[in-house]
Length: 202
Image 1 (cartoon, rainbow, N blue to C red):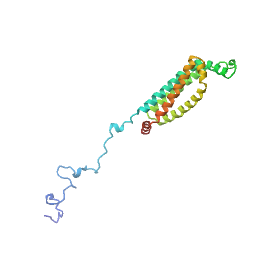
Image 2: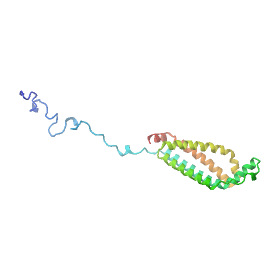
Image 3: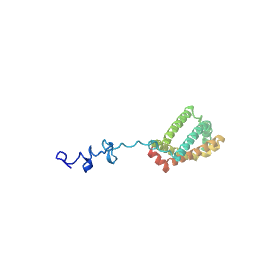
């Protein structure tokens, strides 16, 4: 029964009136599962898997190993080249019909060996950044590797001279060939489909 002071019969919810306090039933819990303040629930925290970096694919690990092999072969080749430089220069002079006495001392200085070692260390640092997913490192390795392959192929024109200077020259020639193969393989594996996804996600 309604009264003039209570036209909607709010004081008696059992007789078809509206519930008190904005629709909250007894017990203090809101209807419909909505929270009492604002009507919005905070977003759930990210899981550990969502926050973790993308998994490194096997192709990137393979490229990493190939680049390390190429760097190691480059260091070894530089050390052997320190011992074979004079013989290579004399053999080159004979093949060009030039007096070998005009060449003089063709052995590289210790400064050039140290410079080669510094370049190899920087190379390894860039390779490690590539393994972590740095796309700039992948691009830099591609450019430098492409140049190394180009000059290496030009050097193959004189590979007969390396074999002509003896055992160390033959070893140096074989190291150059394996290094070129490792560089080409490293570039190829860096651009496989799973590797592309890894660098984009990183």
